[in-house]
Amino acid sequence: MINLNSKTKETKPRSLTIDADVFLFDLDGTIYLGDVLIKGVLDMLKALNYLGKKVFFLTNNSSKTIDEYLVKLKKIGYTATSEQIVTSTSAAIMYLKTSHPGKTVFPLGTVPFTNELEKNGIKLSENADIVLLAFDTDINYNKLWRANVLLDSGALFVITHPDLTCPSDIGNMPDVGSLAALLSSSSGRKPDIICGKPYSLMADIINNQIHVNKDRVLMVGDRLYTDILFGINNGYRTLLVLTGDTTEIMLQSSDIKPSYVYKTAAEIIN
Ligand SMILES: [Mg+2]
Image 1 (cartoon, rainbow, N blue to C red):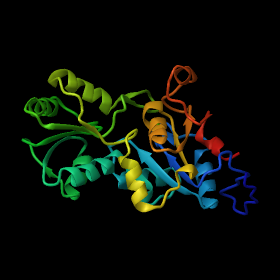
Image 2 (image 1 turned 60 degrees about the vertical axis):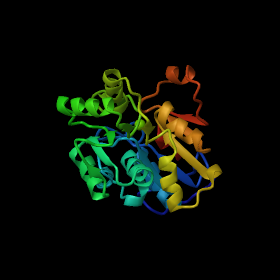
Image 3 (image 1 turned 90 degrees about the vertical axis):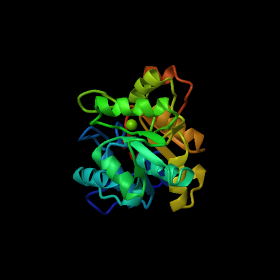
């Protein structure tokens, strides 16, 4: 336990309830729901800053760019740097550039997503070698049709993340895992590669930035099969929060067991 006598009005940390040096936070369902900030979480983040802890945000949500996440966090009162945000889009770009340089991609994604690909030198084509499915909140039938034709012809099937739904303040949104299930049904193809949590590409991005002692890392998230499994897969301690996807009943019946369970991430500071 670290006892503190905060001199600032913004942060009044008394102590950390879980001792770690690097805190990895999921965003949707952990920090906010839609555009609504989860109560107490901002104070907790400010307290971690005050304590000099390293904080990263790891989101599977590929509908927004890193710049858009910076603006969103700023709006809720937290100033982050672009290095602190790791998205499944970043993971997908790293994967495409290192494993398939020069290959063409047919993206199913939002305009900011496809712009991000082009900005990073990924060539886009209607007759691509790779179908890349992201969280396409502007999806339409023609895109699904084109993707299906390419998958039938043997294109590599890459998806940014496996989440079936994305929580919001008015209820769940169908997410990439559900859209992938549609394409799997029509093409008979399962995704060949999944870029985001629970796989390790996002951890590679952090390892490229800082030296990480796995024992001192805490992964915090609301979803067992992505956030918590990601932490377990990478050798980190894990904290499940019950502000988003997972209920206590779901937790009891799951084989994926987090190191800690809190009602909200705000409880990291008491
Ligand atoms: Mg989440």
